[in-house]
Length: 172
Image (tube, rainbow, N blue to C red; front, top):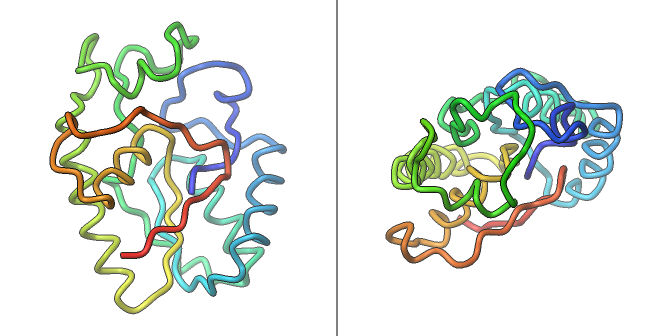
């Protein structure tokens, strides 16, 4: 799942780790919680970024999951966009997914390796729990590529970005 709308999303700025959810983002998370009830989630894994944690906490509240059942996974953080963070978006959307690492941006191969490691941790968590993963647009795309057993960034299809608070079901 991608986090709900953040302040940075609403203002067209590239978010850093501290961008909170907007009121709309909270409503989106509540709506998604109703949609995912059917999966009987018992654990929420989320990025350490504020917007992901607020989304996870909102969903936990809606589903009656104790906050103690939210696991923060540091490697689930968004792609490091370096000097671009806290600045207006200047490129078209797919550029942020496909840039090879200019301007201090985390290289694609490094991001993919990080997401493969993250997937291994999620798989371990899912052995005993139905897990909802709350993350981000770019790193989420790379995580889905890892789950699809892609071997390298060269084998990725066209980048796609989940909408705020949207989710994809993945069987591990």
